[in-house]
Image 1 (cartoon, helix red, strand yellow):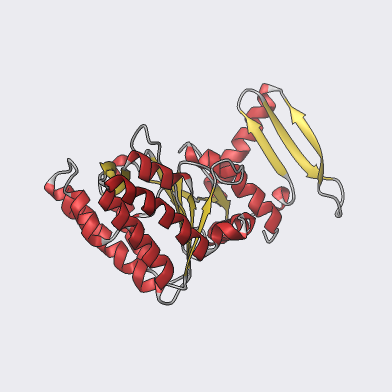
Image 2 (image 1 turned 180 degrees about the horizontal axis):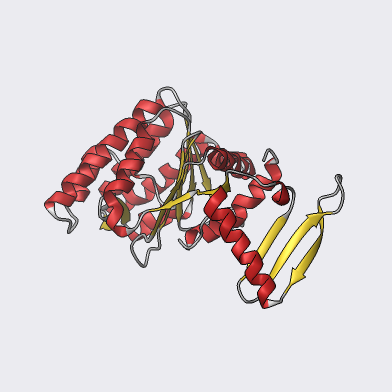
Length: 312
């Protein structure tokens, strides 16, 4: 619905569940009168909570809680019928054998027109210049075919990203700690067709990489960047979130101890718009200094100075 506050609360609640890869969301296409302004919660073999508003002015303020096994089964069967006959599955999950479909979707999103919003656990692969991507992809243990596909999809996404930057806004949220990891551990999380590969970088490579990031920040007025700390409750770790307005939401979970194991997309326009609202609410919570371009450039330049000293 149009309640911005409830949308933001809902997405903040549901994002940690999406990270598990076990969440399913359904959108009711035929909203029955019986379901209007009521909520239903069912936990199999435990209970069913059926909530109602008691008048036209109040919110939900009364409920029936049922623990009888037969009653729970009735509510469960009713919910199953609602989903089967009146709902569409909102989330599409991409298993490990669906790389082709996933990267085709990711490429299509990058190429389409529209504002784009990104929330990253590490610097976006689109901030990695082509010559460096080609260098690092050849350092992986991928097969030649996997390398070719990785390069193909990288170039397509790279081209779409820069074509859009000339006419549309691109907003990026990163964690400051990624600079620490990059400069101290010398590790790059390289996005490939076969998943994320960890690359060990030389100091000069990191310097060139960070200088290119500064170039993008300086060159494109449409590119906005924010750096936040991990200790904020509003910002969830270990996810990459990409939102293309009016079109698609893509979410990927990455645990540094293993390969990415959760990839999903949502293309329902109501939910996509809700994610844009949620993203904007996060952006507003970030301190002005943490999204000031000049200050972020100075921050990155400080890391570059440290790397230069290590080279001496």
